[in-house]
Length: 97
Image (cartoon, rainbow, N blue to C red; front, side, top):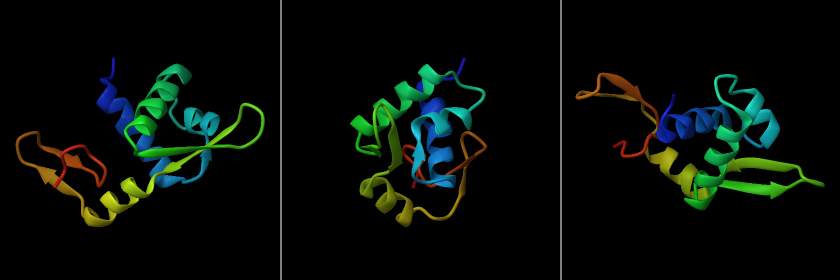
């Protein structure tokens, strides 16, 4: 079972790769997660200010990175290796930099 940080990272990867996706499209891009896990991650990330949800018709929402997340990504464009964990860290990893 993935931690909520791993789930958040997986959802963010999809949104970074394919901006302005519908919520259901994000869920389809994460076959290793349930729709509920994706929804909860998007809800959590939007409350933290990382994502913006835009209503797009009845019950449909477009998901995109917030200006805060874009600004953060702009300062952390390089991917670095975290020495203590030995894994690659992406531009939106919590605590990167």
